[in-house]
Length: 394
Image (tube, rainbow, N blue to C red):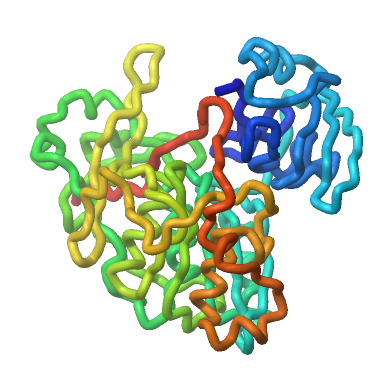
């Protein structure tokens, strides 16, 4: 394996570096796996699926040393020779950024299969609500305007983030008929429910603006004042947005789909048909809030989550209904990309595929048999779900 520095973007949508990662299709066919919006790579109009031929005039293949690529990603500038899908080649010179603002949505588009309108959303991370919610609201507003009746949510590289953002996406997807029904329940251990986790009394509870919260008696609240009962941590559906009537959802998943991403899937599968396409998800049905010890901030698993049918414990991940390889040779939203193509086939049915406005390839490509993917480098992206919705004991 060769080194590929991760495109580092925080859950506050703050990025640094060049803003792209690499995957190998064959020993010498290296592709851009994803490009972070707002990054130097995005500013240079690079997109997922482009083939990287050289980096700093050195031919790229899986035999390059980790040291070479680590050095290339750490430099202030980088030169790339790129081959586009149409066969043309370009040279791109990038300047490394110490700070850029990204968008959590990789791609949003509406596709037509027969008479059906399909909303496709590739979502990078469940970032802070101030960044995530406006972006999601706009996407689903556009879906509603376009008359979307089917959804494909692409979470293949989404490792999670804020639970409140996951709840918001769930409520955008869910039909209004679910209003008031149980979405999820967080389960804390006996120690926390019985008030015996004494370290929590040393942790000041703060609001979204970082200001201390207060109890009804006026004293500053601590984490020991939180209601950790199941009743106090049961969350219900409350429809958001104007897209209504979605009766099933297709999710694209991989081993990088974790925590808050899996939470959305688990929440919905108790109420509407959910189909998974890709490979087995990460498997992390637990979440946390930060515990400060001296100068350190510690993140420990504080709770597990279950849906309305008490389904949880998916530590081995969700097994996909349709096993399909991650097709890094095509951009997000390309109807010929293997995972999306499979979703569109399922949505359209065999009788509708001939009438689709997209060109769908044959069975060999559909089942992924001709594509073998190796993601290069260590994936350092955040995997977890952070809880910030707290109710104080009465």
